[in-house]
Image 1 (cartoon, one colour):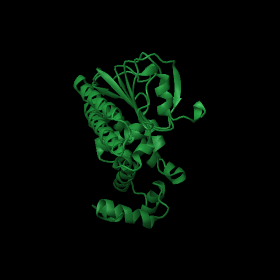
Image 2 (cartoon, rainbow, N blue to C red; image 1 turned 30 degrees about the vertical axis):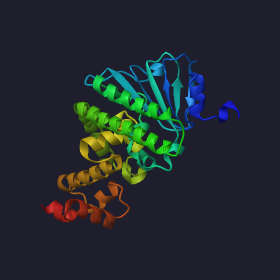
Image 3 (cartoon, helix red, strand yellow; image 1 turned 45 degrees about the vertical axis):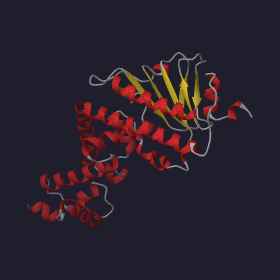
Image 4 (cartoon, rainbow, N blue to C red; image 1 turned 90 degrees about the vertical axis):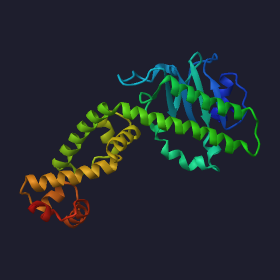
Length: 289
């Protein structure tokens, strides 16, 4: 078998001189000597340590913990693999998950879509919990492969990911003031876009554009909006379109059909129907209030 045909798990184990205890999962000690090289993943990766390989984690915000960091990468991404980093790397292949409940739950762990500078910053207590989860996974790997392996490994990986989800939610909570400033600016840009009539020609602002305005990845921006407003990106844009519609109905004398076209509706009937569902009355009734 060519080296390029081997799985990420096997390749990384070989780089760090680790024994492959399971072909679909591994916990690797990054302090071992290893040549620096980018690794194209065919699996999920979780890196945890006091610093990350390559120094790609950016600078912490003023409200962040600084005891350790955790970063996440999905299959198809590249990560820097090198020795002397103070931490550990968990790798697990999608094939491990396909027959287990965890496979269907992976979409909720949206942090696998975050950028390198959107890492999870851990307190000392959180780091201890994460390291304990790594220990659980490593211990299960040393039991060898049997008919219980996949279920038990997935259970322990899910425990780790749930703790990381809790800690990311805590991080968003601490970053509330910063997030609100970002969302206020994004809201202003969305409203300007809608009022300008650009939606009539180009459609509503897409997630890629909104995340660019926010200065974050699409996954991070959507999670930030959801936690702060209760709406993910697409729903937040739709909500702002109705809010701008209300402002235009009250603040201008433009005909309902013209407002509908400006906001990107293909027909006035569709606008009236959606507005009535949103506001509890027709656009004309709302204007008369």
